[in-house]
Length: 94
Image (cartoon, rainbow, N blue to C red):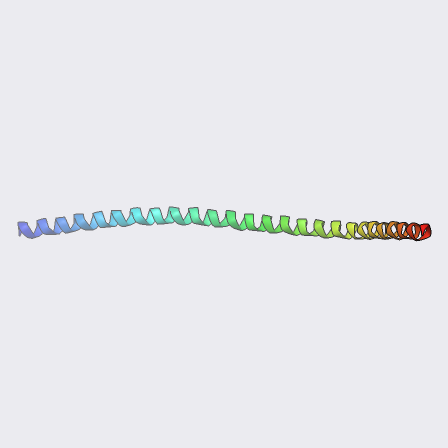
């Protein structure tokens, strides 16, 4: 009978050790989960912020292109007028 009681005590002790080990693992997994959730939140915020900056940059680029369009047309027309005037002067010389 004493032997049986000793075996049961050892079994209880092993069970307590396993329970403690599992509690430690659960605590570690909970901590890792909270850290992962924090990283995910940070990445989601960063993605939104990056998308917002990209959208602003694209809008600004479109506005600049709209501003440049008439200026480029003006420059091209000026170049063509100058080229035409040079050709007229060359033709008059001959």
